[in-house]
Image 1 (cartoon, protein in one colour):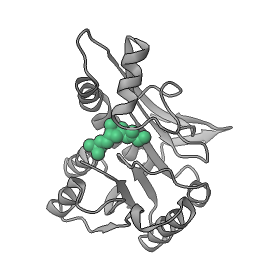
Image 2 (cartoon, rainbow, N blue to C red):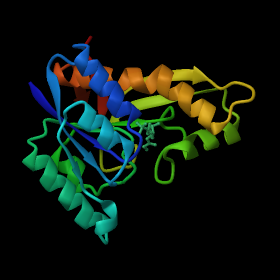
Image 3 (cartoon, rainbow, N blue to C red):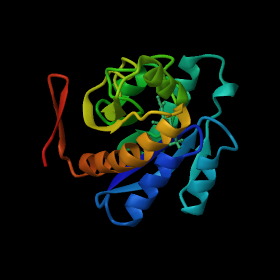
Image 4 (cartoon, helix red, strand yellow):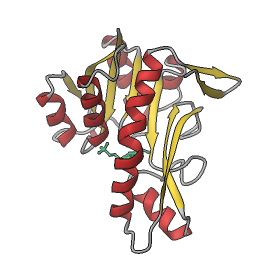
Length: 208
Ligand code: GAR
């Protein structure tokens, strides 16, 4: 059984999707053993508590720089004996020591079809605002491994949704979450825990 540590910063709907999938038996080889939040008081922490999952807060505001914060996260991941780390709405960019210590063992869900609308500054609603401003007709979400490059690691799963007339960033975000993120993130976690994701020359492949 693989220990899954989930990192969050906000509402935690993706965390909830992971918890629900685990409860339905859809992640048979993994167990969410800890939730770490970059902020105190966020609803994701309540979701963890309701599910009986231990949680920790490592408050970004208490660290003066990215290096110190990344070191604190690394120590927590080691203490929790993480086999798989999942960034589920985690809004902090960590330094390269974290992916180097956990190569192809950190999943991130990004709310766009990478390589569109990604990289530093593209997070949360800003991503959907950018998609609407560009006038794209399809957007979606990507689950990928985290590498030293922000949103640049091997792509594992992607799903698309249409952009519709009258969409606001909030409406589009909801569609992307419901139709893609909440399905693909638990699926990727299950595939990882079952040893079904391989990476060759920087490209991820799923053995289904
Ligand atoms: C999700 O849409 C997730 O893809 C996005 O933030 C939202 C968090 O929602 N993540 C990023 O933008 C990371 N770059 P949640 O807290 O309800 O899961």
